[in-house]
Length: 111
Image (cartoon, rainbow, N blue to C red; front, side, top):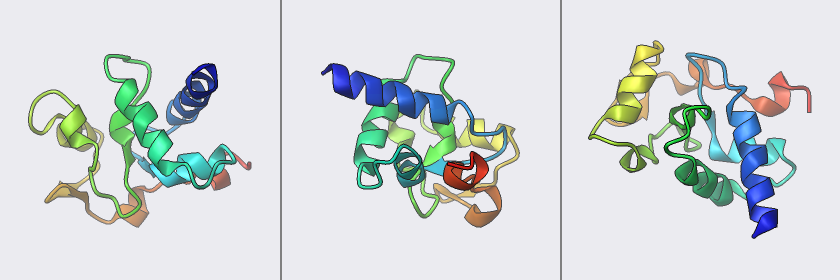
């Protein structure tokens, strides 16, 4: 389990770098960590971090901008409300103009 814990912490390190008002995907974080086929594991890490104020899990969505993790947040629309408070537009549980808000850690962090 220590290996998973270490992977989760590496996921959190990347998630903390997502700028305010931007989003990334589970797959983009996985690719950044050199584990391109581990998007689902990134999702598990995001699910496990709830209750930690230091990880902006609301900024991590699926590859097409769908708020696929929203059911892990308290309340019905908390994930959407957090994103909208940062200026990210959401309609029908999906980010509007996803490409505009997408932050690619591989490009942005020069990894």
